[in-house]
Length: 392
Length: 97
Ligand code: SF4
Ligand code: SF4
Image (tube, rainbow over all chains, first blue to last red; front, top):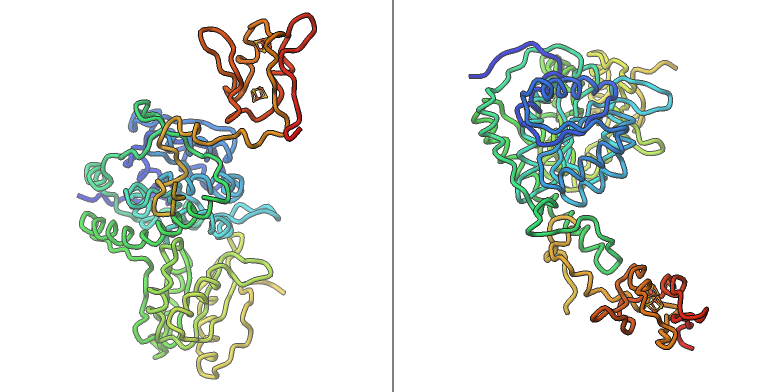
């Protein structure tokens, strides 16, 4: 039986990590993630997990320790935020290139400068090309559920890739919500035993990780890495189907919201999607056909599926909680690419919102939807990219 | 041997066949070649100990010829060689000369 509790996002994620009982955890503190590793180290101290806890001196070392432990043949976790992820950057690519199934919650936080500890998505978006699978979460329940599913996805024998589970710093990590925990036994059965693949510690079958690969073979490795990414969506859906059986909660590659006949649509990640859904409902009540897409699997990105879901929309606003300076927001670029799949060209605008923890309010969503309604009617965009919720 | 395609690779850059580095001949990297002068050799085996590429063959405790398939020409052996009466038993000669 599921247990209903009132916990923070961090507490929920830490509990998921406890239930997964990893072999190794490399821990280093950074706001707003610290709470996850702090709680997890408490589980280690209390003997609730059989985890070797490695206290490292930086996030670069944390990810390096994870790479070694994972290649060694264990279930491995860490967690980070913002500058911590930025410091791991070099090693992220090694974890993915060596196909190591590490699971890492990323409590999304803005990047310096200026120094800021609050939530936005610039950290996760910066790791977009690292080869990690990324799952994004609207609330504490999704963060908990995604963390559990991440182990199954990462460790699947067809995949063997690291997975990042993203949740909004403070907004989700530090707010208390009602969530449902699964029983420890149910989680244990769902995740299953860790299966090794070419472990370094198997002395009967010695292997070497990370050799120099020159131009005669490097590209073949990258092509193989591309190939495995094409298999991820199916595994994510299979794992979600199994998860629904034990939890009753349904997950897909993304969440479509009131999209079927939508003329205007928002694309928006994580916690702000909750606020935006209320605004969509209000517009629907007024007879305006509004809808919303909340991506869940960001890497690999489900281009075709999202293009199909947005097929009726005449005007779309992609909301980014991160900017690519000198370019459009990162999610905008994905949706623009997705629109090429069906050769359909709705008017696509981009709003940058909520940077460094700036509140995203219902009136922001309403303003954007009103603008979209005008754009759909006139067939013309006023501006393609603009910041909202910012003072002049 | 047909070069491997991407479908032939193991997941990740993992070498699953131990000792396969012997198939990779590094001798072609050489610009200077060590040459053994047996009459100056005192069989101390310093060269064998210092060589980073195991390119000095030893049989029954005695030094034999260089294994030029793997000798990269780093010159460490020539530097460490004490030789006999100040006469080195290893000299470095430019390849192509
Ligand atoms: S030159 Fe270097 S690689 Fe060659 S035999 Fe001497 S020590 Fe070994
Ligand atoms: S170091 Fe010089 S003297 Fe000693 S065994 Fe080698 S070649 Fe002979």
